Image 1 (cartoon, helix red, strand yellow):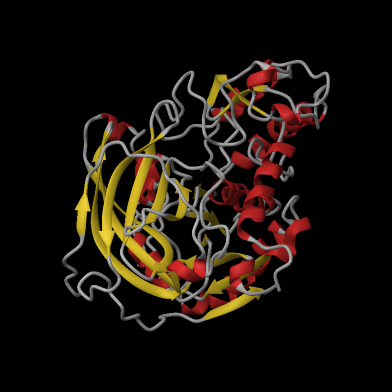
Image 2 (tube, rainbow, N blue to C red; image 1 turned 60 degrees about the horizontal axis):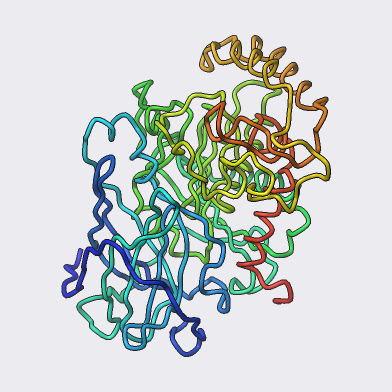
Length: 478
């Protein structure tokens, strides 16, 4: 590993407004610059430090929509030309660290460090790279900056490692610069599992593009895969004392939740992914425990081996649901399942996610323009009956051999309540969302982000997905 020196890094609290719009050809070289960071802290405290900056391959992203207009994510990356103070590029994102800050471990004052990366078009000259975070009022304040000069050979690693694994197109509709590029990677697939991985990729990609609104916009996407080979089949399952030599480091039990699958081995993931063009990452894990995860503009994960016949649809649900998080910044709308979070959404604070709100007054609801005409706000639904069913289901042991047999009648009852609800199919303001029963509201009685089912995304979530596709893809691009 080469030592990279000479980067000027400054911790700044508070920053001036971002400004400017740049022409891609004037300010960027055509390549991709990746900046790896260490993110350290505990609850209520954080610090970024620079790890390294390195060149990747050609820039795969849009060359016109460089400045983020979507206002999503806990953090905001901004890249500014140092000489002219012109804002060249920005992106919202969320992170493993900001989720971890809501856990019991962080609440106890324990410090942890996570590796994170930001990627942007490679600049022609020195730039100021800044990260900002939202405060309690959802306003961004700068928390870190550093100056990177690509002309300084001590600052940016220019050599590119040879790709370790082959890359292949799954769906190819045009150049990466005018399409949404999804890269699918596998973890826990040994050499003997490669054919299974390719079959899994096709299954889940087909599943996503059968789901509204992705099916209507399929031509705006490219999908790539990397045939990542792990030394062993399967991934880590800590609560079962199962440990695997898997290439990407994914594991169950993230933040103490048996079903939450993430990886903290960011640089391994990014180094392997650099061989392919991508805007968004999906990781398929070769394991049979129900689970997955998704963080906005980071990655989505899902399990791929359903051990109970007839329940394979759950894998399809998880894949599309988690991609909703990572792609469009959608919030979980359910509230009856346990998580490892404490106060993920602060009471009375309007979340940044497009599909949950703390406002129950029509004029203040963020999706007020989409409300069904004449619908009451807040919108009544069969919540007491639904909660009674979910309370019984919540007491079942998901890992028990008879779990599915006991769950089946409860699942049918819950879904029937949603299907026959008076305002099913309408856009309203339904209480119960974002892991809490009271005080947060969702747009529809049911949605792919709410129930464990193959329901389509509701109109508000669909609109958010559409905005993201529009931002990354050029509909006329060939």
